[in-house]
Image 1 (cartoon, rainbow, N blue to C red):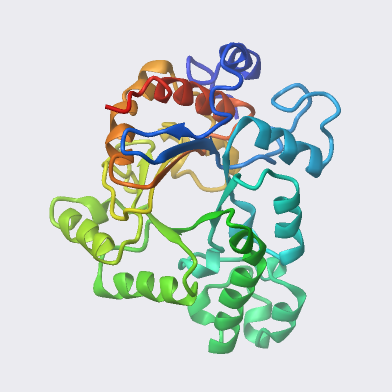
Image 2: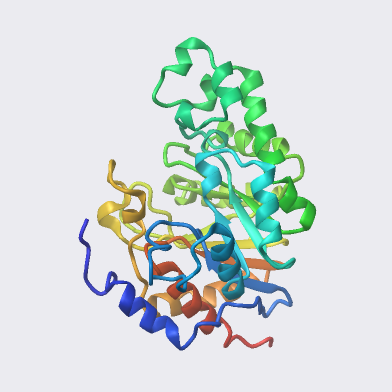
Length: 336
């Protein structure tokens, strides 16, 4: 789907912008609050990203080589594959082996853990075989439709799958991203607390996709709820003017972690069904757009031990370029 314009100049121009600052995000950045800011992307395996000549050098053709290369240039990454398929310990063990001990993984919760649908074929074989007959033939499943024991198994397998990250000290947070049909309510807040309880002490963070959580009526209550339970609120930059548009609010609700995710600002595809997911994030930020976030991130970093800045505009090398650019801008922060 053609996009074009100044925010879609192509991988060549994005690479040229990044060339002089290739190592800008390689190490955590000391924050004014005495903690650290880690900058990275929300993927290292997107097909448009691993295409020849885009981000990875010639010869980086295996999963091992790509992750090792990525980890030399960024200290954090978000794992999005776990949203679609439950993780397995063997894979997480490979991630640990292929990265430095201070490298951090933020891991996206599986769709069934946040009220979103999953295709039965994506579930592990044992779970598929245990589905009641009327659910096994459905094109999409929701957790609310599953027998209680299968819901429990989803959470158990997820935690088991990322245990190597927790054990190695490389787990940053589990990202609980709630869809735009989850509105602020007592039921929704209880679901967030239940999710935290089911994760059994694993660190988590919450991102909303309904602007109702932060409207004039609900914003104070939403942020107070998260702060009362020390659950990090995920700050976002994304398209505006849509039902699912979240305002770029800066709020730190946990002393441990502040998290900012950049989705790009491509409004024409943000809510369009039936298009490749990557097209929603096909957007290269310009310097001024990134610079506007520097004082906001500085403010957030004052209140948290660690701050993660993740570029989710992972079309080609757009995310890696913008991650390097904002890291270069953040590196100019002073500790005063």
